[in-house]
Length: 536
Image (cartoon, rainbow, N blue to C red; front, side, top):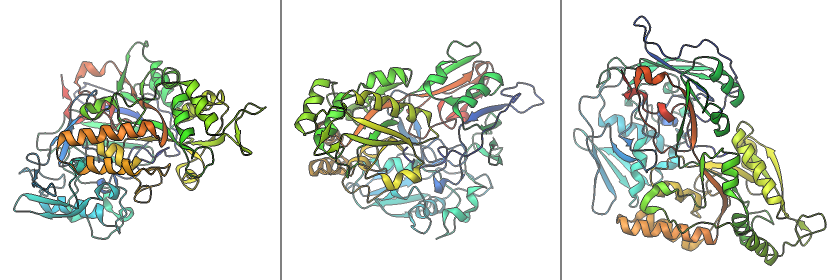
């Protein structure tokens, strides 16, 4: 139930459509080559300053840098609108970036440093109320620097600041200082440097058309349409009975297409985790021994096999194995039901006649909230409740929207997801474990109100050190500290599951998947870089 920083493809709108006969792919010269995608949600805004196109793979608004790599490794952050990697000062505080020449926006204006400066200043400006503002908390100033340059000055060194260079850039002429995001014309009429421009946008559909003036030539896929179907089952039926090119589905529903003729199931690894907060003000979940016991008690593999149909990996900390040198393979919770029961006993939570543990008259029970529009979170919540009931712990699973859950975060548990911009270990960890949060961010940042001085010190060292070995050591220390004193009950890293028609390969040379963030859907998966598809 974690609200992503970008709401672009995560907000569920209350429209369920049924579409048949939608043309998916055609090679008829009289019809423009089109890819039609069935999506669970459409963006509420196409404004990059509001989070649209904010992870380096924008189709309308491009970023200074983009992602490059395979799905099983942490992607490289490589230049896109920038000429080359940033020139960073010896103290790590100044980042100089030179823009590529000859790049134009779709309205014909030329990209220049003023556009970059205006975009970042607008995100930082409190009056703008950008949901991306917290990602730039360490940015002191951004200014033009020479003819083609931009200078970013930080409050303190931060290697992971490179992830902040993945946000989409808009033309300065359309950014008005101090104007709230909600009033921006870019919400419905975006202008960018990317391979696509807006063709059509309403509450149930979005269509992008090839940017005829794109610097590398217009993309071969001339139209990409997104049709909304919120309900997982309705989307499954529509994918099976009509000719959409593809869709995203929960793992178990996607698996139903694996043996069906004419379809393929594509899975993408992610740093997108699922787990539950453990409320700081609840008499049961605030107990450190209880938190450790819960992590030792649950059977993660059983939930991955059952609820996720095998499409996931156990999550013990917030760091998945794809992080390479920053991943601590020893920082795991080896399942130990006997030790879990001993910890609960030691903490004073003893078995009662009705099978539910008690302490000083307080029952070992709590409420677990999940987003009612997300069947995967519901099923994980129910599976977790079933497992923990065997240990004398009662969980009441209830649906609640994000707005309903927020005021209850200190007393009720929430099934969360995370990994909004997971392309550096710092951005995966800092907000979830540093004691300055959630006060410094949103309620879903460090929702358990975890505070540990050694953890803060290790996180700060990892964030501010420019030495790779020192950073790696610091973040491995973070993971060691976490498994000794966990703040949450993490369950799994989700493999995102997509269904695509096989005949897509008859016409197109397609692209692969990347290690994906929490935000996913038809903007990601096999279609993340659809502008790079080439016609056979």
